[in-house]
Image (cartoon, rainbow, N blue to C red; front, top):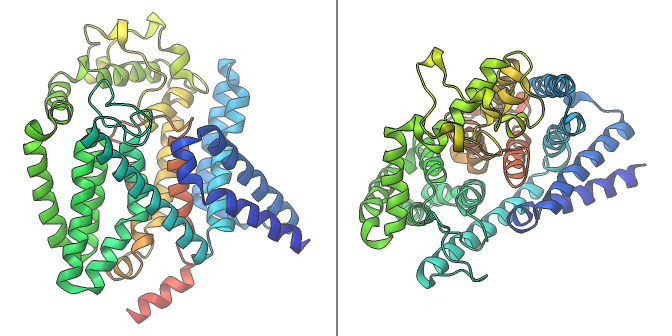
Length: 423
């Protein structure tokens, strides 16, 4: 029996380690990996008769959220099987936390895999910027975004999610151990990431990277000056972008300002309004699994939000649709109503509370990888942002890998108390 369990864990570990590469180039295999690991973990729990992980707050919130979405799908009459299978993502998180990644050596190997993928993305972005096309022959996307070594505009989010646990800990470690020289090296690394992100020209990934840097500066005293200087130089790179990367400047600055000035008539504003109307019309149970995509073309939702004083934009009825509302919380609201939004917020709060438990300045400096995974959870779960849907890959993979990995790094409460005593 023990040998069978060891083989199961080895298989699960072998599947998880290449996940960052799969999330770049093999989305269907990445989905299969997440499902397989979840199934193996469930089998492990049955063999060991160990279900202690169910007692956690985030598990309770996730289970209630899942039940709400399944019920909403039953009432809507579609997507019931997809809603039932949605639980696999939360079981996958539990598998990472309790089974695959508690071993520090496994986490270190995964961190190196993430770091290698981050370097590959940076190299691919600069190669496309300097040569005009990437190694697959693709040029910039139609809106000016760099693709890096990919075929679609996903490099920005992928770089944030791989650099935070894969490269940022190196910068923190250098700044802590090597004095002035280490801080210069850390600054060069962070500045390289910021400039690369400016060239990629994707707004939300750039803002997420800056948010992560700001949190690092707050929690790691030796990195504060480095973050400050990097921020100034990053702003200078944006100021120079009209000369060095006009397409990036147009998207990062001009297009962003235009969207903010006429938000209701912008693509994101129209999605927000449409999702808000759906939730307003179906506050108790939403529209079932993937309800936004099914209901978006319905003229019944071509209205504004009177309670916010927001009217539908002049083009909203014609082009205000997409596959998802570009926000995790609105996605949950359109699927399961207001209660689903509240339960997802509760899930996020439980995850963040556990990931940040005992993470003071001293602990953050000693364990930079744990710090950056907690920061990654803040970045991906922050409610006021535009996101892709986590019902599909690669967003689901990046999100739930970060959450499970962050939770696996949290030591037991008894260990935290002993650390506080030593500090």
